[in-house]
Length: 461
Image (cartoon, rainbow, N blue to C red; front, side):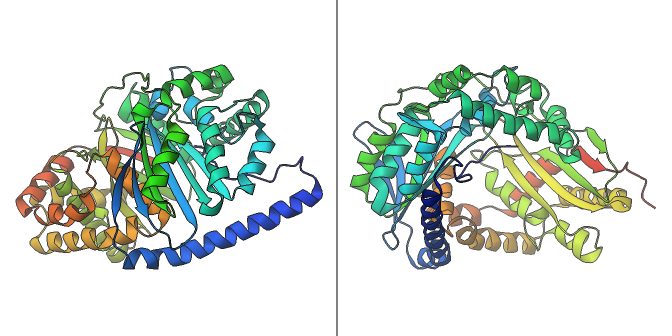
């Protein structure tokens, strides 16, 4: 259970009249956000995406897309590190820390900080990924002075007070205990250990009952000091703010952080394939997952890998979707995806099917994959996939302020360059059918790692 904390319940300690006012203000904020989500895709579609590279006086950089149509600012950022930095025996530390940034900062305790954040018309959330600590903020531009001040306190002076620490940890422990009987959670844990061995990626990101009880507020402060530094920071901003104002805000938010992170080295890892992990459980459906070698985002073959993934299971016209769902009705959904992390890459196929059809479904999926590995796609499939990847990008990645800022952040992490969106179409178009066939053979010829969750795998009739 990963934390992704946005505004939680109204603090119970607030007096009743204030709570009514809080609800009114919250309702207005929700209405404004609803309007934003309705109109912003249309605005984005008709406006050219002009990405500015903003640099502050202290050398902090951010990518900015100005949009003054609506009075909102969306800011997303990542600090390198993430759950792969959890010390052995204290798994769940990064995840626990991200649940506490709005539970008090600077001179403000938890309730006081949250009330001020709501008064500022802002929402703030953090979550811990494998390779980074992610933060996301949305605010009314007219109230940005108050909002930025609170965000600055959360980033620089989180309190990690004992009471909220105990409360959030208890919530996480409850989730871990509940997951001890949840077959999909059991399967996820077994899957990570099977393919990653003792690598940090194999550790449960939410921690264990034992590891969470070992963590103290002092551990959170030490992790924060090691990870929250300008040297490992990436920032993207979209909305009602100009480059000059953002430059000053960057120093305001991040300028007092240390210049460099002190992270533990994390090695690259090749997933261990050719293994079957089965969680036998009396369920009406069986979930199946197959992992194959992947190709990283910085490798020259990545665009060929993207096209192969799209042809295999990345869209509703893919081979898996057509054969498994449409022609045989074995599953409602089946898909493939490229899992590109900083230290490991995979191509993963996933579906769920009737328990008595699991063997048949698995056999069909493996047959489709083998055919694609052996002969590659047709020229018609490649042409259709190129059109899909090019055409879907705007809808999938540029449809709202949040998706735009997330895309800008991802491009920074992948070292794509600020002009990547303009270059992307040509990079996809220039991939040849021979390159795609070579990528298919490289990724799909391996014996996969297989995860099954459900009744035991009976032989196909």
